[in-house]
Amino acid sequence: MATAEADKFPPYLQPLCSCALLAVKCGTSARSVNFAVGMGHYSSGGGSSSSCRHLNFAQRAAPSSTVTRICFCFLLLILSVEADGDWQFSEDSWTGVCEDGRRQSPVDLNEEKAKVEVTEPLIFLRYDRPVRANLSNNGHTVVLNVEQQCEVAIASGGLRGVYQLDEIHFHWEAEHTIVGVRLPLEVHFVHHNVIFGNISHALQHPQGLAVVAVLFHEVDFESSNMVPVLDALEETAGSVGETTPLAVPFSPATLLPDDRSHFYRYQGSLTTPPCTESVLWTVMHSSVPISKFQLEKFRTVNSTSGLLDANFRRTQPLNGRTVYLIIDDEVDIKDNEISSASTSKISHKTLFPIVIISLAAFKIIRL
Ligand SMILES: [Zn+2]
Image (cartoon, rainbow, N blue to C red; front, side):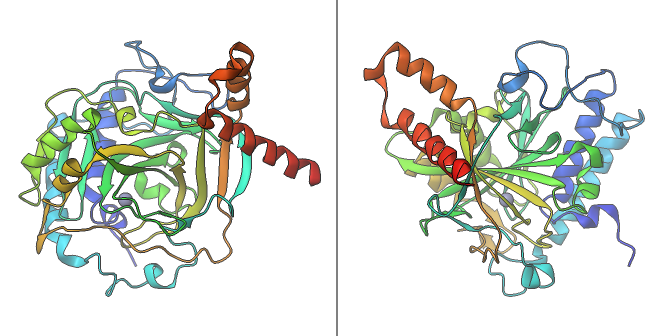
């Protein structure tokens, strides 16, 4: 059955991913950039250089009218808003792969049951770079789109290729649970493998998408990193289809945990219809703080059928899938430096990766 390209996206991704992709194409048309996966070391965010390095895309869009692209984005946004009533988070009416799939997401994560692997660090390319961004209410979540003059991407860390950021969105409460415990918030950074050119094509491959999930835990103090997003959320919460620019430049890295040295990895799916099983999940092991007051702001978001109290999917069976706990192979180097400088300064946070690596080494020896 012939399907329009935009229809292959889950409804909440349709306008936003397309707009992000168009923004990328606009931003890259004038610059040539190169990237060699796994070669050399790059700091998160790619440094402060004003020129674009990395990522020489095989499929690059031919130049076309910016006005046409903006109109196309706007049209997709309208179409998506109209389609928002197609499903709800109750899952009662979710059919097809959502119902029959064997690699569905989210899942429950258990450190003791995960298979430990040591690999090269996960690189967050240009995540530190402050850029203009806007926040949209699509009736299922709020979505952050960032302007990409240069590609924002992830690579290495066990990924086969470079995955470009399409959008960032939120789930309240969290979708992935930790040994049955559900945290209050989860943010998803949605990327597609650049070899597939766009998210529509990437969805047709088992590892076409890579989503990085970050869990949030409640604390007594406010998170300053969340303030620009939540200020924009106040403007967009009331109406489905509302889009508001963030008042200050936004760095995606501000929503990541400081400790990115270990994370869960498994093969799964989109967590909303059509639940396509094309997602390589990375769930960061460390969570990020947020206050109760800030969390409450997410519950003020309106859907087409009233307040969106919660927008998470229940956890799905693993069906024999392996969940990996991946450890950055630079952790031991950093920790050795710390331990040789001052053993007394080693904290439990420092010791944990050492213990895990020791366990991993033990497993390797046994194998
Ligand atoms: Zn999501």
